[in-house]
Image 1 (cartoon, rainbow, N blue to C red):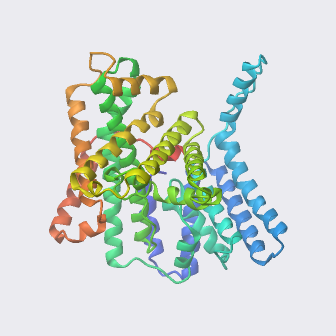
Image 2: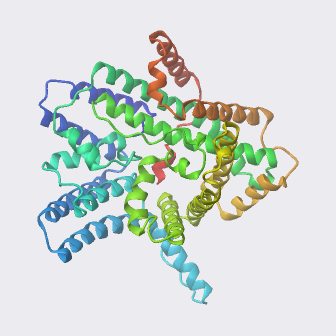
Image 3: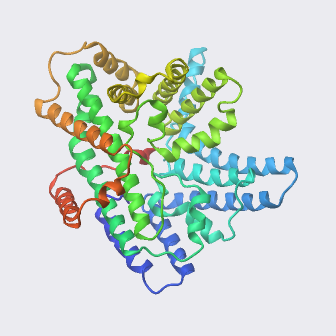
Length: 473
């Protein structure tokens, strides 16, 4: 069940009606828990058992951690949680990847090993809810969080349907307190929540799917025939598509939760107006970047131990962050490039960090555009079908080599350019504020006109029925 489907609209309407009916607080939470399991089961019912298993194990482990004092016993309990969650994630998400690489390694040393075909379905959202439950157990282990008192609240926290399959990756410290007292959306929350859902669906259905995705698909399916303009247009199209797709999902998720009276954290803060790569990761997929910082980068040593160790920790964090996105060396390369950018940025800051010219507006805009262009280059590895395709396309983009014949029509190129300029302009306009702050200064009739236009576009613009990109992660 996806947000951009009629099935979800019916599901969500029923949820709103029942939730705001004459139920006790416990009954409302139980209803949302059941609705969330049904939402997840719409993909593949048996995988609900994995979700339940992760919930029960981390709940029990956290309870024992809270009353256990012996360090060895506490470490053993933590290993149970880590072993189960990462073991399940590794089996379903990385089993085929590891088997393929083992087979290639054997072939390199002259051993012909032909394994059985790996035909395991990846449970949707497993990367997201695995990180969510792990953060809960780790926080309790560190004694930064007391375990929840209610299993219903914890199960609801894990399975709450707006964030379940593609984030944001919640923290128990932020969400569990919202489960204590009865919550119903105020009139303002309901209105803003529905507006966010319309905006998110417009980003996904109209901008990402109808305008950007076809161009990206066309270019990346014809890499060998792509010229300079094709390569850049296709990559800019995917850069816009992946932001609008994922930010559209997060916007819908935040809006859906707000309609029920719950507040989810922002997951994007206009990342294509970032000035530098550390700024980019403070704005892109914020719930993942902060998770990697708190549960990987800092435990590795963070900035402690000298500059060389800090660079090593950055690289390891970004390489593993790339692998989190997908079981492919292309994602590792994507993470490695971002790690390299961050390391180079640290080196540049040590040399020129205090220079007055860096505060000039023209310089900041130039650095922002350079950041955007360099991030676009990394998206080639994210979207390409193989390393060979990525190499060909990057060579074309950077050198101008390639076919003289356009794969795309002039209309496609101009359309991508228009949406990209709109996207960059919007991000720079709002980089130091929020969507809500901008929305509030618009008069009521202006907001109504905007929403009516977006809804009309959702109805009239034809497009394919595409799942959200991050569902595959």
